Image (tube, rainbow, N blue to C red; front, side, top):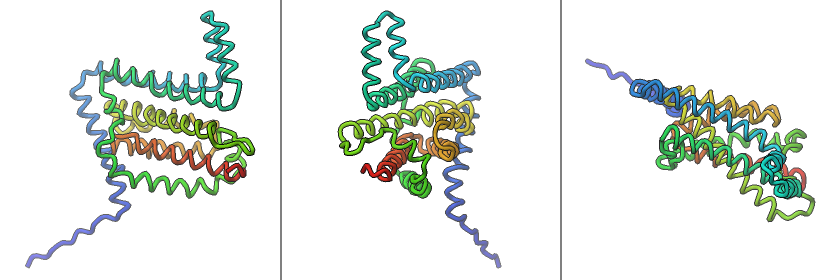
Length: 282
């Protein structure tokens, strides 16, 4: 008489790891293998190099041009527009909001303009193939909600520390200063900056490099992403390594950057609000 063999169902953590990590890695590497088989070596190499060179330029421009507005006045003066240079310098230095707005505008522009040009003019691909689709991503919203909850477990106690309060919030709200217009306007720019950041790192770099490098594209992206956090508290810089891999993997899984952008915006907004609360400004 035949006996029935019972197969034990894998545990929930095992199933989640298989679905959101193992299967993603296998699929990304398989797609990369197929791509390299059917694509001329010259084209695949050219596309990869174009993405890497553009990425180096983006982070360099964002770092140096985003530090202050001196670059703009220097550029205007170099092309003979001295009066415009003086006006630009006066505007940037007039208030902390103007300085922060200049920083945000430079970051958004650097994260978006050059990558879009490379995608459309060099790689000749569709923008939606670089994480800008929404289709099919809604079913994964719970994963990002879980990540937000886990993040808050660490952020809330850390928000009382001196290094945290020295760094946040970026816009230093004055005593008795209303939230509108400057703080709210800054938060809007701050959110747009995070959306642009996700497009660059988890869209342009991850989806652009995955066809040549497979799942390893995430770890290439991780290096410059962590370097962005060198001026922040050490624990936040270390957490950026983990965040880069998690958000990169989820971007491959969902083929979308938008939930990652929402998570990043939620965490950053929570950090600002907690800092303002601890300082007695809210």
